[in-house]
Each structure stands twice: as C-alpha cells, then as structure tokens.
Length: 155
Image 1 (cartoon, one colour):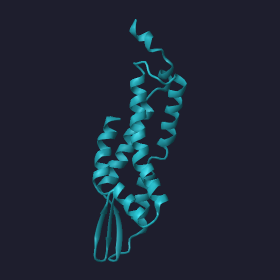
Image 2: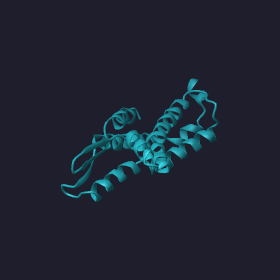
Image 3: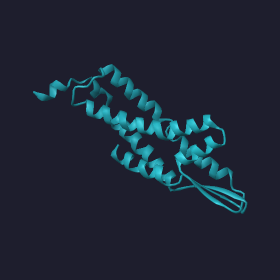
Image 4: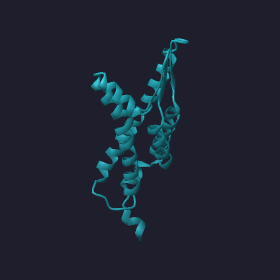
C-alpha cells in the first residue's frame, strides 16, 4: 500500500493528458482537468472525475491502512463493520482504473495528424501503478483475520 501512496503523489503532480492542437500544447493534471471541465459548465463530469480520481483513491488508502492497523489493536468498529469496509474496498477496486481507460480511449480516438492529438502524460503511468499497488494490497489482506481476537496474540 505504501508503494500505492508513493505512486499517487506524482500522479497528481504531473500531467495526465497532453493535448496538442495546431497552435497550442496543453498539459492537464487530474485536478486541473476537472477544474477546467467545471469552468466549461460540466459540473457533473468534473465531480465524477474528482470523486473517482481523488476521493476514492485516498479513501482506499485510509481504509486499507485502518484495516491493517485494526488487526492488532482495539478499534471502534465491530468486526462486522470492518468486514463491510473490506468489501467496499474490494468493490471499488474494480472501478479504480476508469481514469486510465478514459485516457487510453481519448488517446486512441483523437489523433488528427497535425491538427490535434491527445496523448497520455506521465501521470497516467504512475496513477495506473498506484491503482495496481492498492489492488494488490487489498488482495493480500486476509479478511478472515478481522474475526480473530487480538487478545489471543498477547498470551
């Protein structure tokens, strides 16, 4: 999971999309692209981008860290609630690559030779790596350990 966090930082700093038109070149970060979309009036799409690219990955980092730390300590959530949290993280993992797919589709569809082109930026690779590492962290977590009593280990 630590590798996922490390890869997530450059994914938000470097450009996700490189858009070249006849006279200009524009680099867009994830948040910058969402803000630009919101300036054009597409608030719903901007909200989806921010939720899918910022809130969900940060939430996954926090949830996986909480689940891992809760195995050895007393926590406020019951075992049932922690198991539900694990299921949510697993479900969200299926949809985490949606940003990378959008960049790949845009890159393949908008190739108008010298007039316009859209290419993935360096953030696309680091974002994909971040998603892969968090998915591996969630897969390596054994949910059966949620139900173990932490007091049994202190004997």
